[in-house]
Length: 497
Image (cartoon, rainbow, N blue to C red; front, side, top):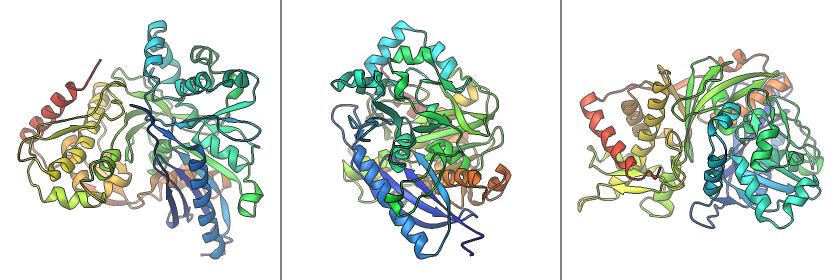
């Protein structure tokens, strides 16, 4: 490959449990991956935090590894794309770049009480009409307000404009550019509950409601846009940052879901289903979210989204807390050895339940334990729970009048053929798994490539998508129905609303 005619793209994928930087060729092939995990912090029940310096240092470290690889190969870098865990909230000092509190993670539920108070004061439908979201601790607004209320002097500093608020993308851009750029993209802005997704602007009424000063907010840009250049001191040369999108929207782009009605589901720490609704912003009657899929050239494409808080995190729980397994790759062989469902259901409401229930006070539970229950049953119940939760989202979509004909999946969990087949069976829907599984990082790379002129149109990108595997349902209704009924009964027992 000629380094001059075929440049590479660096993609920073800052996730919930690790930071990675990938090097992609123009054809979308992965040339190099650097990854670094960082600790999760659980200060209290339902609280989840990250050390901002751990986010930064792990991201920078992997970026340096990827950069060194490109230099060793004599490759020209077209630009950098960034994708990130959404809703996770940081507030930092504009001059020093130091955060005034830990990052409050998207899973965190500490502001549930504040959300209840706000619901007693305002009509939630008015907020949904502007943001497409619900009044829930999941989103960034109440997290930012909590930091300003609980760090001494923070509110005065925020009103004076000496503090900056941002999601992880904005924080990384600020650090990477040496404080020169305080910006975010339309997809991340759309997850804050402060951004009007119709006018594409920060909403003064929402800022007043959530008590977040406008002076701390980042500039909102297209997903493919100029986000400044990296500080030369970081890598030895200054590179352009050209593409940004929240992880689920980036995966939608990486999966080539550009047609209205196309749909993908990503199985990482959580699970997120996004359905492209084109230029139409559909308001769900069944507590799904309306969100920005991407904004390019000032034109907005919307999506309908279902959010599940715990997917791969359930497998991590089996590994780290219960120590039932030592590696996630063990799970497929274990469940294949257990041919039948033994009546065990795990409802992984470790930090509440997301769509379509939106119950921040729900907590996890296991139902159906008998003397014969063993660790394989726990593993199977964890994998099945992800599929049942996805089915709940698809049922909500169907009740909204949307019934997709096929689903594209990605994320670490879908390497497990057994799980994907069970998902196909429970959804009664064909499933496609792509050749390139790193669709989140790939989507960010595609955005940077668009801005750099490496790609001219979305068709250039969608034409690169290739299917690696196809799964079709192989379960009869008389088998499926009692399994789903058992799940519904289990969920009903943990709901608090």
